[in-house]
Length: 140
Image (cartoon, rainbow, N blue to C red):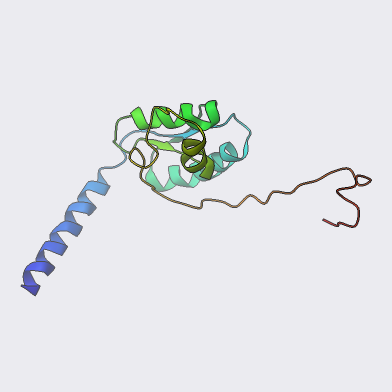
C-alpha cells in the first residue's frame, strides 16, 4: 500500500512538472485595479520584471481603475481560467469592497484563488500641519 502511494505521488509530481513546463506560452496580464502610478501599479511593475525573466514571457501590467476595484475584479473573474490573467488585488478589493458594496458581478470567495500573498508592505502615515492641534506634541 505504501509503495502504491509512493508511485502515485511520483506520477503526480511528474505530471505537475510536465504541466508547468508548458506554462506560460504567451504573455501574462497582471490587472491592477487602480490608475497608473498608484501603489499597486508600482508593485506590479516592480515584480513584473523578475516574473518575466523567470517565466520567459512578458508580464504586462494593465490598469483597470474604477468602482473600488470591482471593474478589474470582474474583468479577471470573467477571463479564461488559464493563468494568463492575474488580479493584482489589495486587501480591500477582495475583502472590504464585497462587504460594503452590494450586487457585485463577482464572488470574491468563489471566483478567485490566491497565487501569492503579501507581495509588499506600504507603510502609511497620517500627517498634518505642524501647528495643528492634531500634531502638537507628536513626532514622526
